[in-house]
Each structure stands twice: as structure tokens, then as C-alpha cells.
Image (cartoon, rainbow, N blue to C red):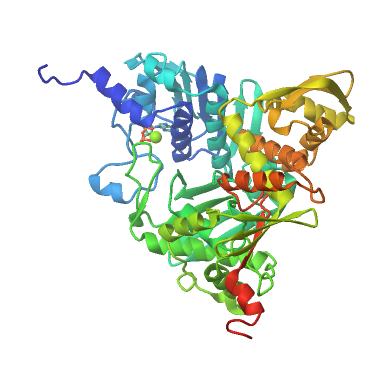
Length: 580
Ligand code: ADP
Ligand code: MG
């Protein structure tokens, strides 16, 4: 085929694909525009997970009517003039691509009025075709209404995930911006339902309480540190409040939500020794840095940034968080000198405790407190995750399994270990949407107090997803008809009770977290208890199952499944080597 220039239509659809990938990208771009316009109040309405409607309204500076048409043209921006400006960007937008991109893949209506103008203007574009600007009465500010997103890009439409997933992505975005901008009044609505509303009075903790619940918000630690033109503010969780993944770690760099930043690693490293293996802190941290020291023009969706001096920013964040943590939280006691804990590696524990016990720590500077970078973290993690090959010796106290590994003796807590095994199996089956379910010979009816019953009632679809077939059966009573085959033979009443336990105080806005928590709670109840004698075959099976887990060393709640007594330690204790 001969070479041809792409038509403007095709070119703009290709470009739009880079910026606007899913409904959440539209929300992000419009939100950033509103913030750039100095809005004090922003409201967002979505319908059908943003496919049918996304509307963002603000009370910012507005767009003059005679510039509306320009605003929706590609590479038209009021935020950047010269190429040099690219290295001094203080606004969230600068590429002049969002409005034109959105306009080329939806039906977009832009309504805006600037202060002191007699009337506002309105402009509609549909799949890139621009209408005429009409004059219209409007309050100061801008409303962007985006309907039928991707209606003209069927391929893109096909790649969208389920409504639940797309909505979750929008939710995650909105809640993060709400935390990052406590001085802006936000109102988020799904259809006619308000999902989040903030006061815009700068009270970040009140926003956290609305999002995570009062109990959790109370525990979160506030950070506010300034050093060498770098500023860090926001909140972090104490070591006692953790998640099983990094999803609740958010960084805003100069007001911009930034994903995949190495600073996430800096934050995690700051918790070294304070968290169980496989657990992560949560936090939203805002970094302010001179705009000349950061390059934001790395990614079409502006989701990544590069620092001129990454090491400096890295250790600043790590040090500041570490100091805050140790200043706020009681320092945990070291394990008894001769016993290695679950994450045993004398190198690591050694370093940690020495930091923790240093009374002069409050004065430690970021650079003195520097810990190695990413590569070594990964290495340490895989080393800790590795499971030794074990030879079964037997059971003691009907509670612990004793086994020999190449490097010493292992004591395994049968309950914690079984919890881990069940949890990983259940989650893996749930991810494949294939939980083998087993019908009970006789369905079991279980009654609950009113509020618990309500809670349970709301969790039935989730439970069905996990292989529990449960029906409402009269007032505040439920009937279990089948349960996951994984739990065959266990008491269905206990399983059900575990679902309502602690639910309220645990509540989190993230569906995936809810699912994991639910799975963890059910598995805890279903796991074999301490005090139960196991046959050798059962003991051996448990070891093998544990060996196949991806995080064998802790239970889903973060408690250790095993204690390791290294040979060297035994030798020392018996005075065979380096006697004390
Ligand atoms: P960018 O934000 O990169 O400049 P956009 O395509 O997002 O590009 O927006 C183009 C221009 O339209 C902006 O530079 C700004 O002047 C104007 N604009 C867009 N949204 C708003 C808004 N909510 N309030 C005021 N002006 C806006
Ligand atoms: Mg923009």
C-alpha cells in the first residue's frame, strides 16, 4: 500500500486512545481541569459506571465563549506557551489533549461562563464533529458532560471491564483526590445517590473517617515534614494497620496522582521490621517538590513522573515516614535473643532492632537512615517467601507440628498453617470463578440478631461467589444449602457466624479488600483448631499444602505460621559452638 497521511479523524482517535482508556481516565482528566481552573467546589455524576454519563461541574475560572472551540482542539492549552515551560509545570494539565480526545470518542457538551461575562457559552461535539457555540445563561464555572463514551469506538468498548470493575476504578480515583485536596468541596454521585461528599474545610481526617470509618481514621498517623525544598504531608497507617496488597498506597506529586512510583518502595521500606511478611501499610502521601526537579512529561496520561534526583526524594520519604512511625508507635519488643522469628534473617532483624532502640532516633536524618534500594527488597522478599523442604517429625501439644529442614528445626502452628492453606485455595478458586460447592445432606438454619442479619443479607451475593448457597429463611434466619467443598464436613453455622463477625469495624470501600477479608475470616473459622490431634497423614498433607502456598510463612491475618530454630542456634544453646 502507498504511504498516506492519516485523516484527522483517525489520527485523533489513535491519540485519544493513549489518553482516554476507560471511563476513569475521563474522570481524571476532567477533575484535573477543574482543579487547574482553581475550583473550590467540584461535583461528579456518573451513570452506568461512566459508560452512559460522566458529568463534572466546577466553580472555577471558566472558559470564555470565544475560546470554547479552541479548548476542544487538539494541542490547545492555556497552560503552556514555550517548550521551556515544560520543565516548570505547575498545573496538572499541559498537553492540551484531554478535551479533544474525549470529544472524539463520545458526545461531549461543554458549558462554561467566566466571571463578569454577561452570558456563558455552550458547545457540543459528537465523535469529533464540532457544533456551534450557543450563548446560554450559566453560573460561573464549567460543566463538562460526556455521554455514550466510546459509542463510536466499538473495539474500545469491548475492552472495558465489568461495570463493577470500572466503577471501582472511578471510585478509587475520586476518593484519592478527595483525600489529596481537602480544601476543595467534592460531591460524588452515582445516578441520584451521593457516594461521597466532603466539606472542603481542610479537615483531612474527617474525609478519612468518611472513607475508612471512624475507628481506622483515628489510628492513621499524620505526616508533615519539610526539608531542603522537599515537603511531605498526608497520612500513613501505624504498623498495626495493614493490607494484603499495595493498593491503598497513594502518592500525589505536586498535586498529581502518580502511579508506579518508586516512592511506594520507599514507604514500604520505612516499615521494615514493623510489618508481618506479605502485609503492606496504607497511606496517601503528598510530595511537593520544585517543578524544575521533576519531569511530568513522561506519559500520555501523565500517570508517571521522573525526578531529577530520585535518590534524594526516595530517602527523604523513607526517612520521614520512618521517623514518624517510630515517634508515634510504641516500639515492638525484639524477639527473645535466641529465637528467630518467622522472617528470621539475623541480618534484617539485627538492623531493625538497632534502629528501633536508638533513643536518638528522633534526630536521625533521612540520609543516615538510608536503606538499600528496590533490588534488595525484592531479593529479601523472595528469600522470606521461600519454603524449606521439611521432613515431618510429629505433633506436639495437639497444636504444633514439628519438622526438620535442611537448616534446623521448624515448629508449625497447625491452625495458622491450615488457615493459610484454605485461604489461598479459596481465593484461587474464586479468581477462576470455579468454587466447587457441596450440597449439605440436610440444610441448616441459623438465626441472627437483626443488625447482623441485615449485614449477612447484604453479603449473600458475595458468599454465593465463594460457593455458599444461602437463602433468607424467615425473619433474621438463614438457611445454608451448600458450602464450598473445601470446607466439607465443617460446621456451616460457624462459617456463617464468621461472616458477620467484626464486619462493621473492618469495612473498607474496596470490593476486592472486602472479598479477601471475608475469605480470610471464613478460613480462620474453618481451619483446624489448636488442640486437635492429627494423624500422620493429615500432618504430612498440611505440610505439603503449606509448601504449595505462595505466602506460606504467615496466616492471612499476618500471624506467623512457623518458627524456625536454626542449627547454629541449637549448637550455641548446647555450648557446641561459640559458647556464651
Ligand atoms: P490541558 O488541560 O492539557 O490544557 P485540556 O484539553 O484538558 O488540556 O483542556 C484544554 C484547555 O481548556 C485548558 O488549557 C483550559 O484552558 C480549558 N479548560 C478545560 N477545562 C476547563 C475547566 N474545567 N475550567 C476552565 N478551563 C478549562
Ligand atoms: Mg487537562
